[in-house]
Image (tube, rainbow, N blue to C red; front, side, top):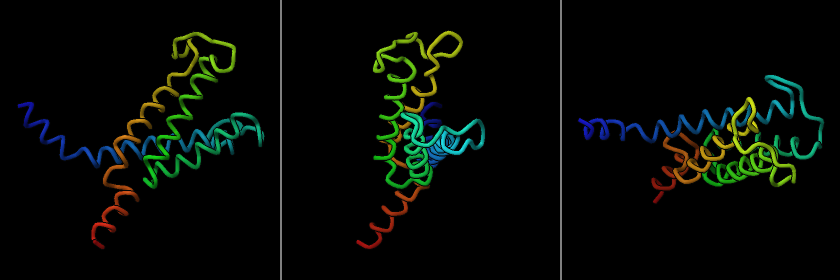
Length: 147
């Protein structure tokens, strides 16, 4: 029974990977637009504010690339690194010299749970690729047809 389930689910892996990429890319883009423009929620960060404004630029650019699936592996790798830096610098504080609570959860922790999840989700995309529904996938197919 599990073999049948494994085989059935395996046929959906590439489209589901694409859906995963699109959702994480859109959410990441929205984190950047909230900081840059105050949209859809919250106030915008003043232009040039270190490090949030620069992080927002990275999030918008890489988020759009990841969402459409263009240069996904490199964009996701850089985004994963940005989220790792965000966790260690802003949330845990060990890179900034002011360590916070070790635990990443809200309500008494350092609030970095989302940064960890983004970091590893983007690391997964960097290793797995964009999936079948992507600009990268379309480019691969057009190159294969020309050969």
